[in-house]
Image (tube, rainbow, N blue to C red; front, side, top):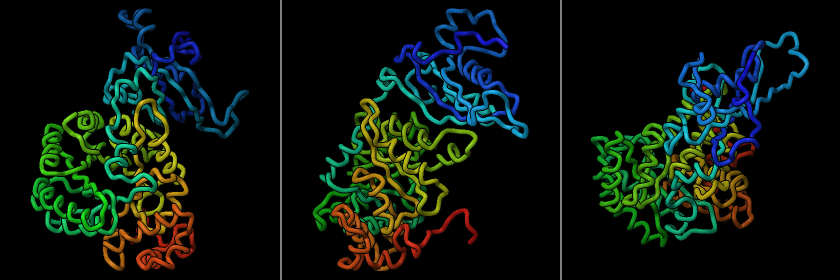
Amino acid sequence: MYIDPIVVQYPEALDPEGFVIATYYCATPRDTNGLKFGAALAVEQSCGTWLKVPGETEEVRARAIARVIGVYEAPAYQIGVPEGVTERHFIIRLAFPKGNLGPSVAMLLSTVIGNISSSGKVKLLDLEFPKSYLDYYKGPKFGIPGIRDLLGVYDRPLLNNMIKPCVGLDPEMTAKLAYEAAVGGVDIIKDDELVASPYFCPLEDRVKAVMPAIKEADKVKGEKTLFAFNITDRTENLKKNAMTVIKNGGNALLVNYNTIGLDAARMLADDPEIDVPILAHSDYTGAVYESEWSGLSVNLIGATLPRLCGLDMIIALTPYGKFPMSMDSFVSAGYKMTAPLGHIKPVFAMPGGGTTQGHIEDVINKFGKDVMIAAGGAIHGHPMGAVAGAKAFRQGIDAVMAGKTLREAEKDNPELKAALDAWGVYGEAQATQNYDLKSKF
């Protein structure tokens, strides 16, 4: 076996501003040489082919070939592979010349996980960006600090509500439910990801019905509310839809970022005429991250990449309710939304997917105040009605921020008590699990 020395490098030997570093988990047959496998991935995703061609000069290779900067086996078989072991597991780190990528997510992903996504058990775990690459991206206009400024709320987690039922409502009924949630204390309400502009609830009609209801609710509660209208559509209609919302008084947008594409979402976020926050819905991301063997990690597709592309709030699926999500993946993705990333603003994680008032303590204990607790059924399906459902969340948030437990707070708050009686407190034996898509009905 011969591997060109230019392909295998110490990371210290490379210009730190010249490369994007990708980290992969790979599982291979017993007889695989890990270094050779890493080199094959690097060559496939840069200037090489399966055989040497005349145009692949030393100058071309020096400029464009990806480098293997780490191959680590776990367990680390150093003197031989034991009998009975049929599969070996590697962490492989590749450095890609920044000049290969250009300033688009499409080419970033084409480069770091393009053809090799069809190479068996290869999963992209993480990406490390030099400052010179981050400079291609503006990031969120608002993020956590901007949204707090819009709402005038600085000292607590924010509360989000998804309109329920998900689909089928007309504009007037949507407005009625939005009013109830807002009056109860919800900070940001959103369309469901399944509602964009169906015939029974066209986008423009929905904005014209909902925004007066939101303004009336704001007068009653003395706080401001954002409503994120779903503008998901064909690429050529996205800006038009955004401007329809803004011109009719809408104050936030929602996009299903993985179905419209990350560069399309970035186009909206970068547009100076679109001067309202954008909420990122995570639907279809499971098709990318759920396999333990392939695709991208949830940290990347569910946190880092949408944040890089300028989205201000990101739905984070949780282990609490109906979706399969491990607790460590949930917490890790949430931290990726707020951890320092050059000039890119931190964004709100929105834990949702079966969240109830009984989860408030756990969410705040994990993320502190810079989180947006998202609930649908636990507000609109509250035993005392939607207004009470929203109030119960605010009661719980205020209590936990004041150092109380939910059980202590329920004594003085009937709305919170009704919610806890219905669904319990997360971690207690009597807490109910909302319907699980993996279980039998």
